[in-house]
Length: 409
Image (tube, one colour):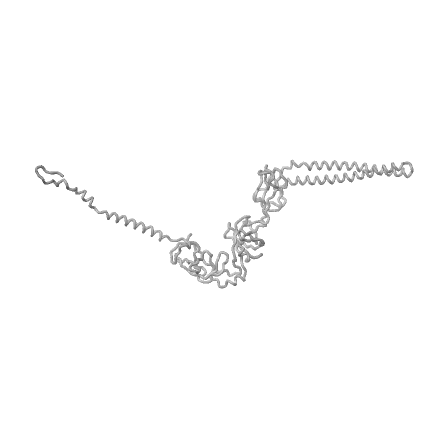
């Protein structure tokens, strides 16, 4: 504080506040806080509006009227196309492949050559033939000696009757003839043994030619030229055990696993509709060929084999297939009160009752329905729906009665 000279009163002029600083310190802050709060409220409102304004996507199907025919779907199952006759052709001997004629997709007939194996090690055929020829040649010499011995025997007999020759000479002549007959019989047996060895050696050579056991299509080529093949794996990891795999396309059928709880509905000869996964719009008529009389304890299923009424080139082994077992007229008579059929996925259980959601003019309507029996993947609806009603089958979670929805395209 400044004090003027000659005066005892203090000088207060130095205590003045600048006008700009006074206005800056005294300005209120609540407008800025108010603006920030309003902005936050607007952001939250926009987020809530965006979330609540999102229209659910659903899938709908039309309720179908029950079939007027005498057959209805009893249950569904899935499986694969399998051939009754499939063979991996193998060689009977261990040898090297010299020629390979089998190729994937090739049609073969019964007895057609698939491959040739190296037969250079099987020389026993030539040796056996040589032994047989040598033995047969010795047999001819023995026949000549026997003829001469019989002549000597007859001459000796005449001389003995005339008293010119002794009985001892007659015995020697008879012994010589009998010995030659025995040698001829032995040689004939040796020739037969040689023929047997020739057949064995010929079979070894024939085994070097691998042939198709039946007519079909080659679906797998399992060996190449230069590889070793063997009927077993004793040759080691570099030895093939098969030449090619052949499938009899005339023996194709469907193999499915049916839950043991429903196997009582299946009987031999009952009609079946098969749909290949590759051709979902193609319904193939078929029938149950046999029920395998054993169950899989792990899967609790029973294997059922289904035969096609007519085969088609589009049906290939190991294709996935879904089948529908069809009932008869007696089963249809029990369903006279059924109004429509809807997929099981359209039903929901709420408060102890079964409900569906109908799609009408962009909104859904909750509808309680009466439920009958199950027909494969569909359920009988006895009350609450009419044929052609659009019911929601996907996107049911969180739906409310009257809510606006969009159909998933």
